[in-house]
Image (tube, rainbow, N blue to C red; front, side):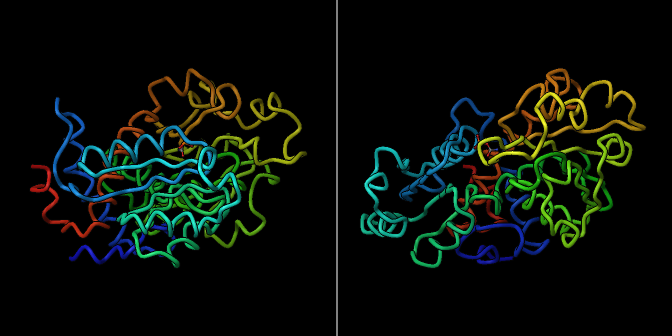
Amino acid sequence: MSAATIGKDLLGLEHLSAEQISLILDTAEPFKEISLRPIKKVPTLRGATIVNLFFESSTRTRISFEFAEKRLSADTVNVASSGSSVSKGETLVDTARNLEAMKIDMVVIRHGASGAARFLADRIRSNVINAGDGTHEHPTQGLLDILTLRDRWGSLAGRRVCICGDVLHSRVARSNIWGLQKLGAEVAVCGPRSLLPSAIDELGVTVFGRIEEAIEWAEALNVLRLQLERMQAGYIPSLREYNRVFGVTRERLDRAPRDIIVMHPGPMNRGVEIDSDVADGPHSVILDQVTNGVAIRMAVLYLLAGGQPHLAEAAKG
Ligand code: CP
């Protein structure tokens, strides 16, 4: 299989095939080991210049991309809206074209507008990686979530994953739903109807209105953050009420008919969608997700730069 199979850009998982998703997951495997070395650096992307354009807040994704780029020896520049000419009204495309004039190779973009990554990718020559666009997609988060489950299960086929909480505002949910379904998993969502998209039934997922039903059904829960900054008003009565009705708590997991894996993409609202003794307890793989994020991003950078999947092992140096 050639590197061209994931295309010029990574904008989402909706339009990737199962083979393309598996290709990225498989390519990530040999890259995991680099982060365990005392000297966490290989020369694979030496000479490549990558710009990280983060127009929304981020801890995990921004730092994880930067680690991935540096561990592959790329040269990196970080641009945020504050402190750049975006704050003076410069358009996204003008910003990117000016960066391209300085001969860059790739852009990693996080933006508050759904479709921003596609908009940019259609207008510049550099490879574009979507690091989260509005409520649309967050493909590398979906991939690292799936890799974390594949590490536990070997295969996703026939496994049952429930995405819980604020699906309406979540780009992570969409990337997970598409990615998991393509690899053969059954996917459900659970949350108050006000936090589920009106067209959720069209995505081929089971819908649970009670967290107890979701826990009864699922082998893994992916618990989403209540995105309070994207809510105008009136989605839930109160955070206390939300925790009481939909919170993933130790008592609820103790009543589950099987061992359940608990994931969360972060940042967490502890005591709201997830209790601390779950987040830090034996069901949680939350920090494994973060660790896998670096390997996934190394794999995506490597493949978009033209790396051959079958040479990823050798590329480790
Ligand atoms: N999961 C995730 O996107 O986290 P950040 O917002 O911290 O990047």
